[in-house]
Length: 162
Image (cartoon, rainbow, N blue to C red; front, side):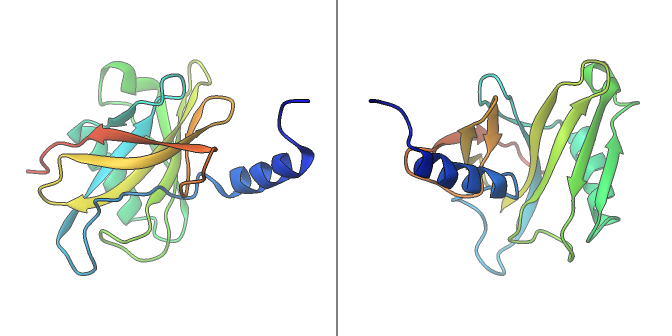
C-alpha cells in the first residue's frame, strides 16, 4: 500500500508546525560582513520568490525597525496598484540591523483574503540572488530548513540596494 505512514505524517506535521519561522539564505553575509536587507514574498501557486519593490521594502523595513520583539501590521495603501489592498504582518525578533535571524511574516490581501509568506533576509551588498527552501502545504510556503523529501530549493533575484 502506497502513501505516507502515520509516523511520517506526524514528523511532517511537526516540521510544518515549526516552518514559517525563517528561511535559509545560503549566500547570506558572514558574521560581521556588511549586508543589506531584502524583503521577499513567495507566490503560493507557483513557488516563485519575488523581491518587493523599493518603496514597499522601505515601508516594511521602517516598520520592522520600530517593532523589535513584537508583531507589526504594515498597511501598503498609498503605494499604488496592487499594493493598495495589501497588509503585511511581520514578527520581528529582538535586536536590529541585518541579523542572522530572518524576519518572517504573512502578506494578506484585504479584498480577496489571499495570503502568502513574506521573509526579510540579509544578503551581501553585491548579492544578485537568494536561495531559500520551500514546501507545499495548501500552497507553497517558506521552510525553516531543508528536509529531504519535504522541501525544495528556490532561487530568486535580488536587485542592488543602492
